[in-house]
Length: 99
Image 1 (cartoon, rainbow, N blue to C red):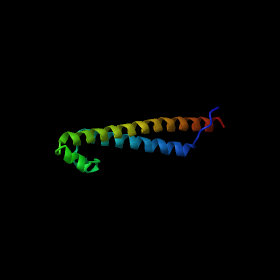
Image 2 (cartoon, rainbow, N blue to C red; image 1 turned 135 degrees about the vertical axis):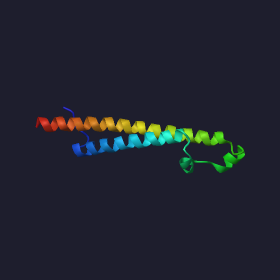
Image 3 (tube, one colour; image 1 turned 90 degrees about the horizontal axis):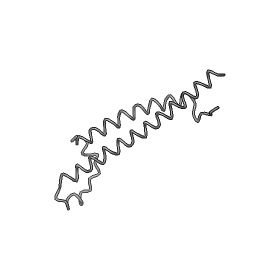
Image 4 (cartoon, helix red, strand yellow; image 1 turned 90 degrees about the vertical axis):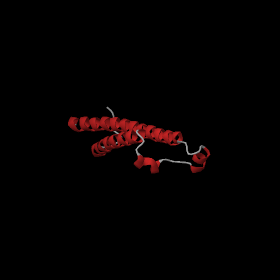
């Protein structure tokens, strides 16, 4: 018999929040990937380095790409959290049905 690490309400809540995180971060990553101008303020632009590169747009494009990849990695972590939460929810439901 497997012992759950969290209860049914906590695992259900974590699964719900994980779905929200997956959707939000996947969409945010897509917007970074297509270089949405409204997200330019969220890029970690190093002004002295960019000035040395004569304000080359490739520097900004690389920052957009890195931000998109970071969002997709975080979405992947939320997928793992969702799977773990669903497993815990199933274990909790199985224990409540057997008792």
